[in-house]
Amino acid sequence: MSAGQAPTPDAVPGIEAMFHQILHAVQKNDAVIATLKQECHELRLANASLERIVKDNFQADRHWGTSGFATPAPGSPHIRARSPFLGPSVPRIETTGPHHPSPLGDHALSAYPFRNYMDIPGFYVVIPAGGAGTRLWPLSREKHPKFLLDLTLKGRSLIQATWDRLLPLSSAARTTVVAGPAHVDTIAAQLPDLLPENIFCEPGPKDSMAAIGLAAAILARRDPDAVIGSFAADHMISGDDMFLSAVAEAVVVARQDFLVTIGIAPMHPSTGFGYIRLGEKLDIKDAPNARTVPSFKEKPDVRTAASYIASGNYHWNAGMFVTKAATLMKLLAQYKPDLASGLETIASAWDAGEEQRQAVLAEIWPKLEKIPIDNAIAEPAALEGKVAVVPSNFGWDDVGDFSSLSGMLPAEPGQPAILGNPNLVLTEQAAGGIVVPGSGRLITTLGVDDLVIVDMPDTLLVTTRARSQEVKRIVKKTKDAGWKELL
Image (tube, rainbow, N blue to C red; front, side, top):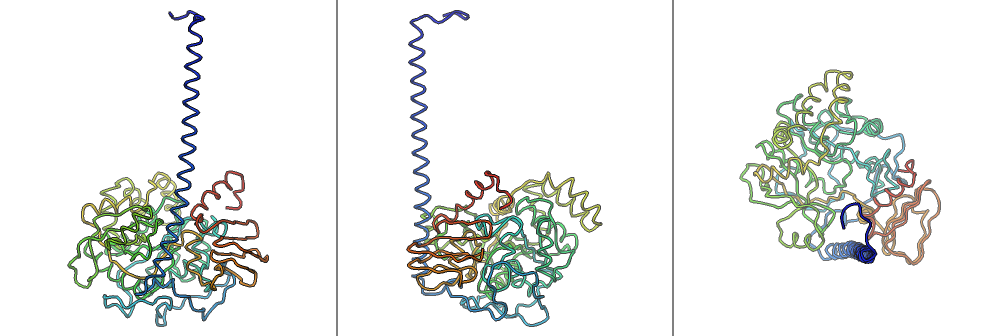
C-alpha cells in the first residue's frame, strides 16, 4: 500500500489482530510486573523478619560479652526525664572535674593503654548534626530531629551525649558542630559551652562529604597540623572506655597520613549497616589494633551479612573518620577536585567576617556536589591503600528506626519498651515493640506483639517492628497528601 492510500478491507483485520496482540502482551507484562512487585515486597518482609530472629538468637547465644545495650541501663542519678523532649533549661557541662566512664558498658579494657582520657593536643572533634531522622517520625521532625531528643530518658539529648563523650579528648575549644540554620539556635542552647566560632552553619543539606569537608577546610587554615575526628550527633554508644581508646589509637594512625575509620564488632547480621573489610595489621607504634582497609561493603542482605560475621573479617561501618584535616582535603582534591576547590574558597572567607562569608556561601554552596564521604573519598582511597581501621568492641547503634530503639530501652519481661511516662501505657498480653506516649493520653494494648505505637499530640503512628525501616514511605505519603506541617 503506497503512502496516502487508505487501507484495503483485507488489511483492516490484520491491523486489528496486531493491535490486540500488542494489547495482550502489555496486559500480560503488567500482570508479571505486579507479581514481581508483590514477591519483592514479601521478600523484604521475610528478610526483615529473618534478620530480627537471627539478631535475637545472636544476642541470646553470646555469653562472652555484650555490646552494653543488652545490659539494662541503670537509673540516672541526675535528671529523671519523663519525655524525650528536653525542657528549655539544660544544665551546663562542667569540664574541670574528672571524667567518669559510662556505666552502660561491660567490656574488658582495650589492649591500647589509654585509661586516663587526657586531652589529645591538636585533636579536633567534628560533629555533623544533619538529617531529619525520618524513620523515627513522628517523634523526630525536620525542625526537631532525633539528635536533639533524649532517647535514653537520662536528661541528655543525643548530641549532648556525643559532646559529653568526646569532651575529655578535645576540650570545648576544639569541639565543633556542623549544622543547618534551622537547628543552630537549639544546638547552641543545648550546648552552652560550644564556642560561637566553632559552629559551622551550612546553608543547605549536601550530605556528609560537604559537611565534614567544610569543617576540615576551616580547621586546616586555623591549625595546619590539625587532626580531626568526625562523629555523628545522633548515634548511641556504650562502653566509653573502649570508645575513647579506639579514638586515641585512631589519632596515632591518622598522624601517619591515613584516613582512619573505627570498625565496630558486629553483634548480629545487620542489613541496615555497611561493612568494613579488615586487611593486614599495620606496624605502627602505639597502634596495636590498626589494620588496612581493602574495601568497604554496602548494606548487604541478611545471608551475606551472616557470612561476613562468620568469616571474622568484617566490622560494621559506623561512619566515624579520623584523619589530618590537610590529608582529607588532599584526598578530596584528588577524587573530587571541584568539591575540594569550592570548600577551600568558602574556608578562605569563613573567618573574614559574616558579610564576606555569607556572600561566598551564597555563590558556591548551591553548586557543591551532594555525596557521602564514603563514596567521595573513603572507597577510592581504600583501593589505593590509604585507609586504615581501628577495630573495637564498644556498643554502638545509629538508632536508625524504632526497632533498634526498642532494643536499646529497658523493658519489663513480656512488655513493650516505653519511651516516656510508663503510667500512660497499660498492656495485657502484648510483648515486645515500643510505645511512645507523647500526647498525654492513655494508651492500652491487648493481645498484640511487637507493635510500634507513637502517639504525638498531632499525629499517631502504628506499625510493627518488622516494618519500622519503612516509615520513610509513610512520611513521603504524608508529604504528598499535603501534611507538610507535620513533618
